Image (cartoon, rainbow, N blue to C red; front, top):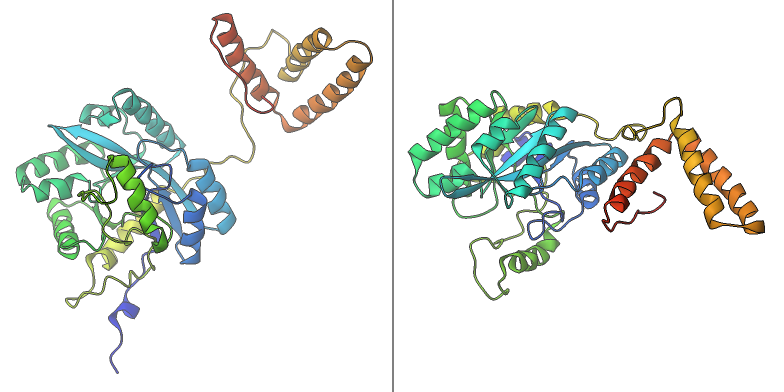
Length: 361
């Protein structure tokens, strides 16, 4: 009896190009929900690559820790080159890479969300780069039949990210996607670049497709009755089954599920596996008077203000409460955190800048 070819394929276990609702109009699910769905479907790792931000990084790691899968952190930047804009997903390989990524994102926000090749080259430490999905440079330039421009740009990016530049294969059930994936894999082989399987994920489940479409229209400034090339055409951007069961062409195993592609995908995921969340909060260093500890300085500042604000019996109750609060702060080692917040507000108040703290800080 013939065996279903889909049951013989090795599964995809790592999602390396995922947008959450922190990418407005490009994703609709929270990092927590994406992790939950990925864990339900048996994935081992999920990488958050929101556009121009790492806003969901902490939530992703907290959820991944709870559900027992790896959380990888990255972001998608917008490369502006020769009049074109290409989405370039970046993944941090270490805490230093995370710092590099945030430095690059800060510069991008200062330039209307764009980065140049020079900016990428100056901020490449411990970062891996993917060639991008439908808005990436291979797809855009191949669609325009600008083959020489593609070769030049691939050479430049491979030089910026030596042994850390990956050709991204993706599938979104658009016309020609299977053929495109095969072409991109052949391109990777010809250029001696590793190819990885990285479908573009923008929602946890297929039922969110109408919401994704509506928010895309809002981002584009059009109504749901207006056609537009950037509108999603289907629900394929939901987290798929690991065997990508929808990819079942008659001409053999899909390019995304070839053993070498899956091995490269696993290698990239392992290279970008590192813990973002420390066991304890490590506050920034603060300015302290000579010979005075952070706990002593915090107690001095708070008691000094206490007697300005309270009198009589109210002062007694407030003092008892403050002593309890300071004991908790000492036990948790948070004195530096509160003093750092105080440095910021002191700076603002001294210069007439309106500011307010948040929560206990």
